[in-house]
Length: 259
Length: 303
Image (tube, rainbow over all chains, first blue to last red; front, side, top):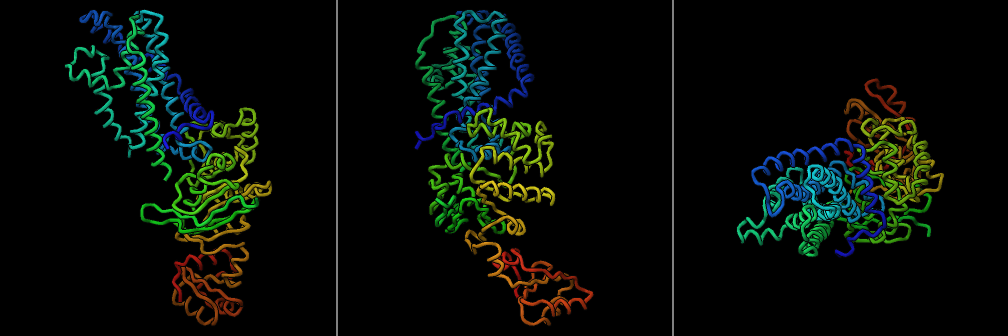
């Protein structure tokens, strides 16, 4: 049955993606303002401020270390929050999906479109962070142009997981559990602020199960100009979580909406 | 193939509660087919099943000869749907609502632009094309929802209580548009609990209650079969009304709420009698679908 969840109608998911893009375009200015403003403050305040005390971390300036970590973690947040709060709004109170389900589109198309959109949003906000980081001198190589495509995958990964929560959520408050139990620990443990190697060994192997750690491991060398290790493994973990999230979310959302 | 919709022994239950209990119906091409019934009769559930939006617990559905839910996509591509509660997209303007919805059908941009113009004209919303949804009245939203349902130039239009909660002007306008659609050869399937709506629009209808079909036929045939030709409605003091109507002799008497109905073949004598009773107001009229509906779906206190 799971195989049948793949979107069948060409362009169906894309129509949902275009719907969200159109909404985003209406609110573009404030969005772009926050996309540039937030990383600017973070990197300036934490990167320079803390960097002054820390100096180098793992053979790179702390600003570079932090900027690459924040690129990954902010994509996690962007995708997760869009897939939870915004998708829930469209699914339940706004009844957008109820309307879409009277067209040829099915649940799998809608969720595929939502994931594409979440990933696109990650690329938009991630590119803004990358530009700010480059302006502050934190980006050391042109390899950084590979960061946005990686963020797209990070977006697919976390939106897939977020959609599972949305399918299960009785209301917005439900998302607090996921944020507190999953997202925040992952944010703290996955090497965004300090290297994973400084954690206790037992915890280190646990962290290798977390998708954010793999996102950080891919993005940091691309920003710092260091050699990449285990690229396929990192890509596979992110893609695996994304695909699993999608399939589970489609199953749960069908059960919720097609009653 | 002459039937657009064919439903055979359809069943649906939620948990242990059976809401559709084995219904059969056939809708011919070009017909306006009505599904009547009180709230909770299973009308909306039947429509959801028909569109492949809900798993069936028994029976068979074919639309355009295609099996549901397997061919749901293909069927919905050729169907327009007006849901009971408005679910327009509040993030968009009137025209954007039509454009975004049209894209879900994969309609090319140029075709879509032309169709949006025609449809806004059709529902008289051209001057509101760039208005936000929140600024529209209930009647305008309903008209836009009808336009949206027509964006894919559907062969079948399914309408779930299309005029519920609307003022008489909008209701008449929508009835006019639905007649236009029927004239244009589209098949209409609508649910309603407004008998006047069913009587005006429907070529054929079913009366449903508690998940079953109680009766099926043309409005005229159902009225002829189930109601005496003349009706007197009486309002006023109960004792007085009962006395007056009891004196009338043969005929059928029913009380629904604060109104007393008297059904008869010849009302002249009763009318004369009532005219002499200033404590009562009464209305003498031919039988209509509402009389059939009340008789079939009960709730009356019989004498």
